[in-house]
Length: 423
Ligand code: LLP
Image 1 (tube, helix red, strand yellow):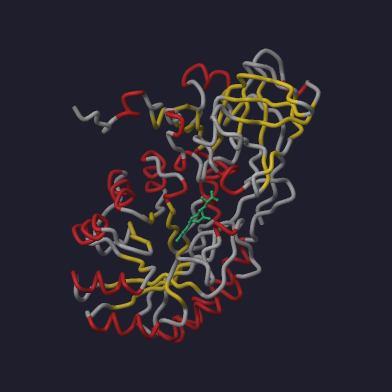
Image 2: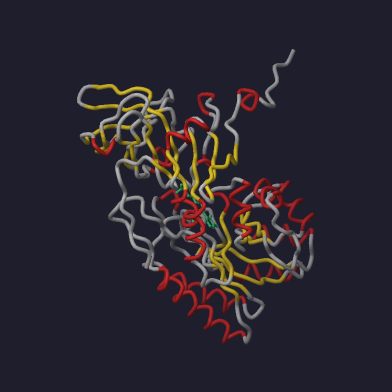
């Protein structure tokens, strides 16, 4: 089991490089990824036959390129993600299954791309089987099944049960087989992803459901996918899932089905957060420190346009302070609210689910210090927006002790590209 991390309230370096140097080279707000942490997490999952990165978590081309070089395959949930994977060098050879399109619908562009490049499809609705079958009779597909229950770190990331739009309802396999039959489509795999930030408790049930559905589909099934959802600790009292147990449960399911079908099934896992969350930090500069009634507000130059998770889910991110002119570790720790620059009261990084402003005990901040929002490498930059006409941040990858720019900070020209003032 991976030992739980300890989070510090102050730090001066990321991956051995001084934060002040990173900021003077690249400015703020700045996303920084430590490659060595991604590599560690890939190694943790080596027991699985296939690790497929859910690129929605962190889709920068450089990150995809590094995943590819480590033998990690990729999923894609949109035409844009298929194009990203191809641009990062993933092969579209139909034998290799390097890119899989996993979604609940085809939009017109995605369907054309899938057909053009023979991208394997993981269908999240029965309609997808028919729509693909009509255009490509005889295709192979896998099915994403909603087993009737789910679990996530928040209701918004729970992807199973009757309130979830995701996947094919577990009692509708008949309908899928009928549709497949109609177009000569073969169901070659099954996939279950019950939520993001899930736990071990539901896994027994997931494996049972997988076994039941696989038996219903029959021996055309060659792969099963555990989906993503592996949590990472964002607080000190949170833990990783016991990966040995996690693998064992899935491996047992795979072995039972392999015996039943007379061929060895391939076992996939499809994590996003687990692979990149801990590698990423968002560095922001303190621009104002002000007392508002009883609350001390520390306002930084990154907002929910840069990191949306606290506002969207009440997510907790570890936060540390890097002193500009003196070591923050020597300062008194006080309760403070950390907020951003946006014209919205909810633009607060220290909040609880339900949108309540919360405080965090951190070293007293001064204007010019840096605040580091940690574990921001999954669903961080990829969920950034241009709200309030803010340019999106730059991204930097640190590998072999060197900081490399992997995405330029946006400019005003990027911001208004495509906008038209009619004459
Ligand atoms: N596979 C499928 C089909 C998914 O829908 C997802 C996530 C994953 C894999 C990867 O899940 P992960 O291993 O990263 O938990 N924005 C939210 C998370 C949304 C996840 C959406 N689907 C957040 O910031 O927590």
